[in-house]
Image 1 (cartoon, rainbow, N blue to C red):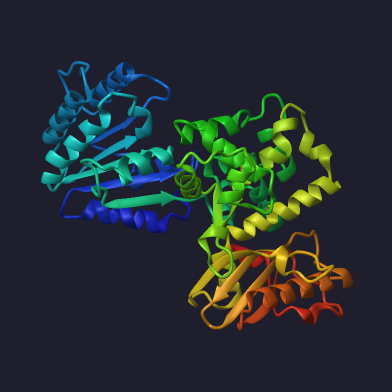
Image 2 (image 1 turned 30 degrees about the vertical axis):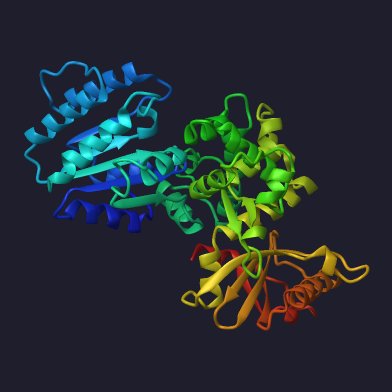
Length: 473
């Protein structure tokens, strides 16, 4: 059973029912469910399917491709000497098929494209000179290596330029979809526990599939990450190594952003010395954004120069904070309890969950159809008054109906209490923002919390609130 993915399934169905041959590219973060989606969409029935081999050379890739041709029903074929010959075998298989639409599924295509193998030119030849000239071929390529699919397919300067007819980017599950998946699996989790797990794992389908319904959320986190035989031991390196053929420059960006919870601009990444401006940092940032590891939040008013990049991959944040130094400490998470370190991390992690659910926040506030822009903002130190502290706002929703929602995101185990000190801080943020930006729009202070805000003398100082339950809408 497929949870969510309705838009993606519609695109696949549309491609299948087309009167012409179609070229579909499915891409996204490792473990997000790309292969499962394609297989389920076609009930595991393909004219031909093949998956590239991880970290193997051309010779073994060709041998594996030949085996896939044999399994699909092609007889009398030898191991091809090159990729042009391999695709000739695929053409023969397609010609012999009596199916109305021949569905060809090439999985983990980036692994197949080994250096100097000629795979891409053979793929170009297969599609441009043969498959696209027919009306009965549906070619689906799938890859976790987002950098590969962007560079080699979407931005191809050769024969594949603008040849992909459907681009399907598969995102992690939302909170609502995680809840549906948990219910389907018989996991007895309330929404507070689901958010806790989401702060650790995000909406990565495979991670959720590893949860044991006999365990609590805390016990499951220990089983996945904290013991010598943890189910996801070594996941960090495997994750980035699978996504990028040369992962180290991407890891440098991730490490730099992981050390700065408030985010960094492109120039700050370069000035920090860890990330070198080799002329490709902009592309690497875009690729990390495409994978869902980072988000970019333009400054207000929108200026490209001051765009802030933030690490939002839940697992990666959790890895930096706890896993990398404690992965062999059995029961670490159970014993960590409710210490100050955990509470501080929960605040940051919940903030990231909110940034991943801005559309749900908009819906809860009652303006889902109003055109908006999402921003982050930092005060200009040169414009602060004497003795005035600086301000950072992680989420501003700039609306076309003349309102700006200044969002404060707070994690708590009960109703959140606004005290005198925090009330003064909220007023200060709003005042500094209004003065330095000169905006004429109305500023609405918006609280996004787990269980709402406790009614007290400061309750009326904000205009709207969103609760955890509304993030599941």
